[in-house]
Amino acid sequence: MSKKKPGKAGIPEDREITALKNEASKLGSELSAVRKKIMQNEAALKKRMSKKIELEDKLSDLLRSSYSSEKGALTRITRSASRKEAKLRAKLESLEKLDKIYEEKKARIIESKKRQAVLNKQLELLEKQAEIWGSYA
Image 1 (cartoon, rainbow, N blue to C red):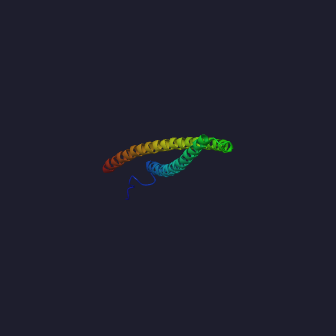
Image 2: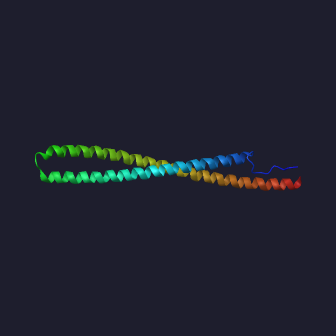
Image 3: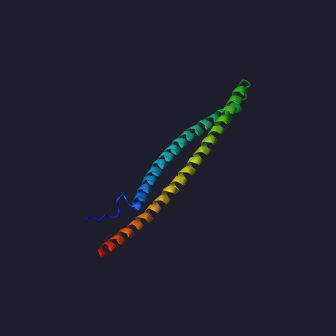
């Protein structure tokens, strides 16, 4: 007579635990991807910000020199800087959205781990109960 031990794949709790582990793994991968994307966006933003500062420095140099031939260049640089500033603002908003997604996914992973701990405790109790019932049989 072979007794079926608790913890085999056929028990619904085990399937749920496995599903939660898979979900936690998937969320961990997604979290890593989001972190990587955030770091890439931050690096790109820093590069663009340094370019903006450089352009602003050029702009201030042009304002000081006040040559009439440079007025057109000044206008173009101002427009360019404004466009780049708008793009940087959009990138910053994108980074903030990614950060929000990161925090949400992090919260989901923490909640999943909590559920998994509860399920593990329930499984322990069921195994103990099965041992007790097995001793009566």
